[in-house]
Every structure is written in structure tokens, then in C-alpha cells.
Image (cartoon, rainbow, N blue to C red; front, side):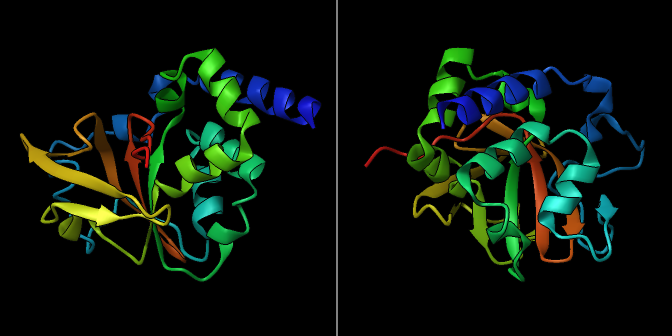
Length: 185
């Protein structure tokens, strides 16, 4: 078991060093609306027939997230019908976590599961709806607060949505730049 966790930690740490130029959020369109103001009629990327896990895998900057979901045993959950809304930390978001803390998180499956479920909302919540919400309850049971500042949605005061409305067959992904930690209860 420790070997599996150690291997996953090494994979995650390697995955976190991704090239920022590969980040979906760096694709610019001079006519694009602010990150969360994008309407669902104009999704950032439509992936017909691909579930959330397949969409995240093919997008290329979610290796750390997909590997963490695998370690936590949540991949099959996010392949189900849903719908789900995933506040998806990109590789750079995982790279912000100090290596020792990330390794400890990966070794604690219960805590890892809580952290990952804190990034998932039951239902399909497009950017047009998120931008008008104050907070939302996650699958973990906690709430994520949302504020709009300078046209950008900020979650819990420290994570910004960098790209919205990556469509999947069973929901939607909103890319965020910091891993969210659930409140301690």
C-alpha cells in the first residue's frame, strides 16, 4: 500500500510540473468574456460523449487531479451519469501544495476523499449560474463561497476560476488555480 501511495505521490509531483503553455486557460480569444461570464451556449470546449474523467484526461492539464481521484477511488463515481460540476484544480494548483503535505494527503485516503469531494457539486452548474451564486454545497457536505471580483469568480477567497464550462457528457468542469480545502468540522 505504501508503495502505491509513494508511486502516486511521485507521479503527482511529476505531473504538477506541467508546462503552463499547455494550460487550457492560456488559450485566449480577444472577444472572450471573463472566466465565469461565458454562457453555456458557447462552451469553452464541447466534448461529446466523453465523461468528466475522459474530458479531464484529454484536456492535458489535470494529470494530478485524475491521479488523486484514482488513489481515492473516485474515478468510477465521476464516470456515472451525474450530472456533476467539478471545480477542477489544474496541475499548477496541485504544485502549490508543499511536497510533504501532498504526500501526507495522498497517504490519507479518507482525507484525500474529503478534499476531492469538496471540489464536486451534484448537478450541472454552468458559469452563467455560478456567477450569480453566493455559495454552493459540495458532495463533501461543506460549502464553497463564491464572489465575483473584476469579472472573475473567486472561490473561498483564494482560488480563481481560470476557465469555465468544459462540457462533458455527465456534467461540466470549471478549471481552478488553487486546490480547495474543506472546512474543519
